[in-house]
Length: 85
Image 1 (cartoon, helix red, strand yellow):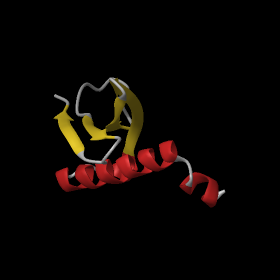
Image 2 (cartoon, rainbow, N blue to C red):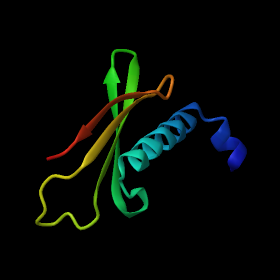
Image 3 (cartoon, rainbow, N blue to C red):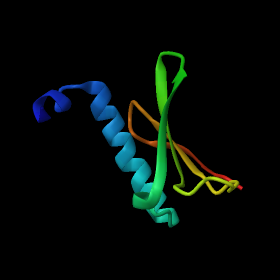
């Protein structure tokens, strides 16, 4: 299974993006392990960006506080960091 994952370009792109976003989130002070994480693929022409959002697990009745990190799928660079209010 590991060889199959390593040969899958999309899986590797997502893994790189998660690693970069997790590092950035930790540097900001976000508890990644205790976050509810969602991932969205955003198209930009023939390129795309991974949008990784970290929110509280106990989100019911709570507003804001999400951390959103956009990561370039091609090079794994952080595009932008958004903090929810």
